[in-house]
Every structure is written in structure tokens, then in C-alpha cells.
Length: 624
Image (cartoon, rainbow, N blue to C red; front, side, top):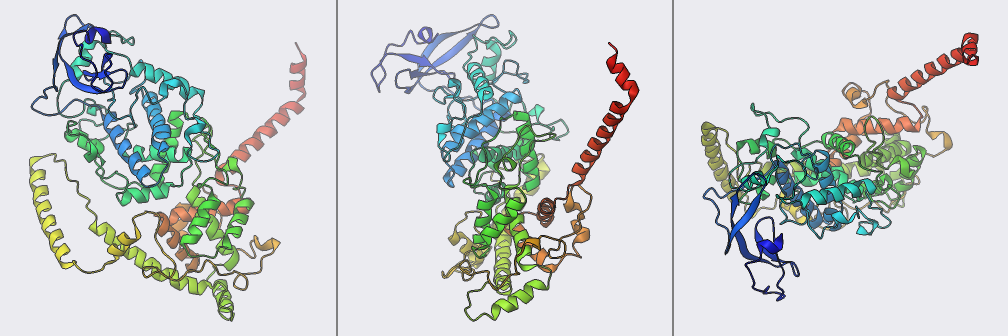
């Protein structure tokens, strides 16, 4: 068909001097040999009978845009631009460059197919649309390898020994997607209703997305189950875990909060021709920062929807392994390096050193098993500190006095460490409050849903800009905590610095020894007499009882939970629940769900025994 469209043009390519022209979906001429795109375009299309289209004339020069300066687009295309910007931000922060092209792109295409928005013969949209090919990072093109059936192959090189294959199921779906993607208006085979006339009609120019009514109701409420901004972070989290990158979910949320990953005003990365209306603003605007539990739950739902195969195993070499994460947290909290072996002991006793217990299992029911890697690492450190120091507001101070009496000065003292970390924690909390106060929460291109709202918002914006300029003049030349935070680098996961530098929070204690400053370790130390723990209640969520147990637990234990909640950007009750779950595994105490399941199995066994012992049942079996 390209030969018919380019029959009237006989000039060779200015780059390779070949005469082999083709026409893109946007109407531009390109060289099939070197893929050079020139400004020659198709000018007009005559519509005859429905389902037929032909080019009437060709002219040289760019297409003339309509006065409104926009084009029609769909909502999933907007989320695609946002995902592209977020992936590029992660790559700039140190994530492997193949993460975007080899993992995230394919998971996003699979999501579009599962939700029947693209790569399917029966889309749910009432209008037909096409994804632009101008961004190969998140769009299908001839060089992406999608139609080659490669999937996520092991040659992506994201980490050593990683298997990046999504399986034959994704390969077949990828081939189907590439076929549907390359389908032209005059060769569509899905249905006769999707004719070339409808495709050409949608390629016109207007403002606002085409399918915003599918995402927002007439009353202005978002419809459930549709793509949202929180799901973009869930997609990133699933892709990061699949590729076994060192960025955890708490790190991702920290980067989002600091603005290093686009989220709050991510729609500002849209091209100028993608005009947005008020209904689109309800879809893409963000009114609050997402929490850890929200994104983790969304990730589980996405894994169940996508029906992904088994994830690559989380081995000891993976940076997501709780033991490797615990070493990172021990370094940041200025704890001795010797504690790593006790954390490994706790993880081994809880059967968390086995790879199958840490790998994401999509086949687990009712929801896929998605471990909390950072919570497991933090809980293991807290339990090991309870094992070594007691943390009952009495034992740890007696051990600290014993360690302080040592003349060598190389014995770790918990009292000295507490004073050092408490002052650093206060400064870190102050820096975080100043950072939030100075953060620009209002977008550069806000949405106004009424004239009165626009007048009030513009007036507030003028006042806020004047106040900001005044505060900048007053704070000029002064060294603040936020400036010291900027000097450290907005890495997101770095909260404390230890060493001899001028901006360090204190001297390093990594080289100190634990001998002489901890309890005597023996085999029966993990018992109710030597190890205290909160009462194990017959419940599913222990964090719901944290408010009632808060007054009874020791103060040192609460302070340690607050310290980890600061570096992980989590609530204290979530960490408390993670610690209780780990202690349940150590003491071999099943939770309420396992108990109910055991009771049901026991009743079934009793019923089966009665049936087998009943002589009537034997007679009925013996009769033909």
C-alpha cells in the first residue's frame, strides 16, 4: 500500500540516496532503508463509502494545525507519558537503563491488553484509538522486539543470574499485540463498525481526552477499577521487584515525596498538543500522597489482574533480600557490624532465609503473596536488639553501665548510642518538616472548576508568591538545615551520616564490639522467661491493638519503633505488626486464620473417619 501512496514522489532520500519511501500513521514520509522522516505529508483524505479511504493529493511541508492547537487523545496515553517520565527519573537515579525498555514497557502493554484498552480485537472503548509511535521507550515499534516473541529474556542484564522471561504466555500475547498495533484503518479485521471513517474522524483536533467519561462520572467521582495515579506507582513497584532492583517500596515513596520521581504534578510532562479539560484534571490530579499499604495492596491486585508467571527468586545475592537490607539499615543507624550475624540468626530461625518464602507467588490465594522486604529487615533488627539488650527499660541500661566501665572504650554502649541517635533523629525530623514547608504543592497549571474558584485561587497564588519572595530575602545568606540536606544530596534513602566530616551527625560506631555489652547468649534465650513480647492475640491485624498496648510496652521499644518509622517513612503501628508477625514465626504460634483452617481440616478428618467406620457405608461401597 505504501507504493500507491508514494507513487507520485520520485526524489531520493537525502541521507542514504535510496528511493524506498513509506508512510507513517501520522502521514509523514520516511525512508525504509535508514528510517529518515521528511516533512512531506499526505494533505487530504476523501471519504467515500464507510470502510474505504484513499489519498487524493500529496503536498510538501508540515501539516496545518487547527486554531485550538490540540489533538484528541485517550486517558491511557496520558498515563503512558507519566510512566515514561517516572521510569526515566528512576534510570537517572541509578536504576539499570534496561528496566524501562525490557520490564516496565512489557508489563504496561500486558495491563493494556488485560483491561482491553489495546492489543486486543475486542476493545472496551466505544471509540478507536492508536498509541503514538514517537516515543519508543513506552510505545510499540518495529525495533522493540515485542513481536519477536522474546519476552523478558535473560539477556537483559539487569542483574547477574536473573531470568527475565515472562513466559510463553506473554510471548503469545505480545505477538497478538504487535499484530493489532500495526493494523491499518483499511485492513482492520475486528469488526466492520470500526471503519476507516471513524479512525480518520478521531485523528482530528479538539481539547480534552476522548474517554474521560469512562473514568469520571457525571457527579465528578472517579470510577473504581480504572487506571489511576496510584496504579502507576504500583506498576513501578512490580517492575522493580521483578527486575530485583535495590529500590524498595519505601524508597520509591520517599523519592515521590521529594519530587525526584514525577507524581504530584506529573501531568505537566504532557505535550502541548494534549489539551486537558476539567474532567481530565479529576483523573490526573493528586490530592494526597499515597501510603505504603495503599501501593502494596494495589500491587497485589495488579499481579492478580495481569496473571504474571512466577517471579525471579529472591536469593541471597539479590539486594531485596532482608539480610542485605538489614545490613544497609544497620549502617544507616550506626549499629555495630557484628549485629549482622544475629539478624541472620533471627531470619534463619523464622525460615526467612529460604528463597521460596521471599519470592513473589502470583498463584497464592486469595491474593498473591508479596513479601514486605523492608519490614522483614527492620523487624529482624528490632528482634535481634531485644534478644541482645532486652529492651525492657531495665536490662539495657544495666548492660550499658557495664559496657561504659570497660577501659578499652571499644565496647558498644546502648546508652551512648541512644543519645547520639536521639539528637540526630530530632535534627532529621526538623529537616523533614522544613522540607515539607518549603515544598511547592500547588501546580504550575492548576485546574479551576468554576469562575469563583479561579478568582480565589489566583488571589491566593499572588499572596503566596509575595510571601515566598519575602521569606527568601530574609533567609538569604543564612545556613539552614534544608541547605545542609541539599548538600548531602537528595538521595531519598540517606537520612543520617556518620564519620568525621563537618556535616556528620556523629562519630561512627560500626567498628565497636558487642562483647561485654550484651546478654550472654545461650540456646534457651528465645523463651518467654528470657525474651519479652507483647501478648499474642487471636487476631489477623495486630496493628489494630497497638493503641491499647502502647501504654504497656517499654519506652525503649517504642522509641526504636519511632526511629525505624522515620527512616522508612512508615507508621509505627505497621512496624509493630511486622515485629509481632516475626515473633509469631519464631515462637511457632499460628495466627487466627491458620487456626480456623486447622479446625476445619480437623472436622473434615473426623467426618471422614466416621464415614469409613460406618458399616452402612462399607455395604454401599461393596454393592455394584
